[in-house]
Length: 180
Image (cartoon, helix red, strand yellow):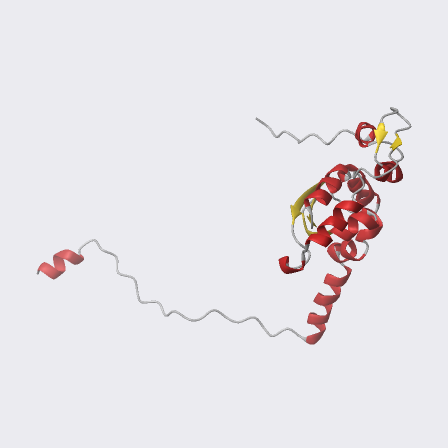
């Protein structure tokens, strides 16, 4: 009787047989080739192939596009000096990408070594820093706008100093505020 009292008011369901989920049908070779072709012709493939066209040869040598999530492009930069250069060129780069048909509204920068750490020797780092556009060089010129001494690399790149360049950029987009 004790057993029957314990079972009162308790619903007993019939046992269910657990079966493994169905495996998807094997992909055809045609499907695999279409997938590869989409990756070769998609936005990231286009960005990777033509990165130097939009970033410029000097920035492209030290940076590369990593991923595109929504309207945010993540870019890897191999050196802190060049990370700063990409940050200063952010608005120009976004403008070029938008003019090329990409719906990119934000850049996310990450510092990553393009080579294994063993390959980064002191000579490579010195050469990289020597090529940086803001690096003071012999024969620094004067900015044509504000008449201040300016590194030759900045004059070659923008035609004026980095401060005048910053003033000539459009203001950064304001983050959209949602409903409160």
